[in-house]
Amino acid sequence: MPSETDHAAHARRAKVFADALARASGTAGTPRRLDKPLSNLFRDRERPSGGLPAGELTHVLEVDSTEGWVDVEGMIPYDMLVDATLKHGVMPAVVPQLKSITVGGAVAGIGIEATSFRHGLVHETVREMDVALADGRIITCAPTGEHADLFAAMPNSYGTLGYATRLRVNTVPVAPFVQVRHRRFSDVERFFATLEDGFESDVDFLDGVAFAEDDLVLTQGRFVADAPATTDYTFMRIYYQSLRERETDHLTTRDYLWRWDTDWFWCSKNLGAQHPLVRRLLGRERLGSRFYQKAMRWNSRWRLLEHAERAAGYRRESVIQDVDLPLANAGAFLRRFMAQIGIFPVWICPVRAGDGPPAPLFPAPSERYVNFGFWDTLRFAVGYPPGHFNRLVEAAVAELGGIKSLYSSSFYSPEDFHRHYGGDAYRQLKERYDATGALGELYEKCVRER
Image (cartoon, rainbow, N blue to C red; front, side, top):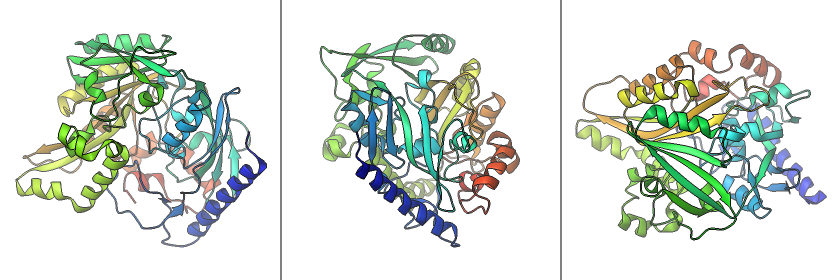
């Protein structure tokens, strides 16, 4: 159990942050973004130096494995949190795929993983949270009570309503190992029918990958107490390639939770990091999302690849998106995506809408739905208007009753954005919790990238 000193230290750290937020909110031109080494946002924008002091809010305050929750500070990255909870035989109910994602960030920007078919999105596993407001106050909000509206609206708010300084997150028991089974499909409809059956199964993890329209893999994971042997995907072996090479596998629980991090799913190929010699030169410690993000930010700043491709007569468009579609329309979306965009592989993750209050800024498209993640760059010699392929994705998602995450580039008109992401409810929340508009507007931040 934590001591009173632990709680007092947390209160001091939270006050330092809230005071800095209040000062920034009252000073024109002061950056209101978090000062932290990495960001999992993929909006190509100018990043100010300095920012709000987030680096101290990275502590685990209490783990109650009996009651099934953990109290954490908002800026803690998930690898630190997982290491702390595994010692108690539990893990957060939903652990996003990348080690550097923070708990507060996974709520404000939507977090998902292979347990979401049972537990929903990250914010649907939160019991309560403390939120620092623009005026320097820290308020506690929960699904019921005086600030239930803020609790429901924090998901997808991206800091425009406040910042979570403490969260109480649900945990689930774990075993030492995860037994993995990969099932291959050549038919889209059969794949999604089997995925739908998975919602009622007794497995602990469920996700899939589409390598082509006739090459899909559904992966089921189960906690097990013993394993005949385990496979290490943290260095020379590449996890996503194993989906088509193996029928069964075993990983330690910690390695399973970070199975996608070593190669940033499969995006490490864009840095040449899947070549055996490059992997050895980089070493195990540099294979992971933190290193790839730094490399990506460096290239984004200097645009060396873009300049080289333009010199060769090519243009490029990054299509880095996560979208959520009703289960009934999942097959139709995937086929349309394959025909219009053609990026492979595509990550596929089933999600069950939670029982808590609906999130007005990120409404679930249906009780059961499917997340598609695709992250690559299209190169072409013909001329397309800016954002052409991303706009095709947005149109398909809207027409098929889905919703798109906002961590990357978006091209919505103000009217369409208002309709999809909160509308009048967002305006009322801003009036109650940020009446002066000090924390900025969601549309300005996520579409106009300001």
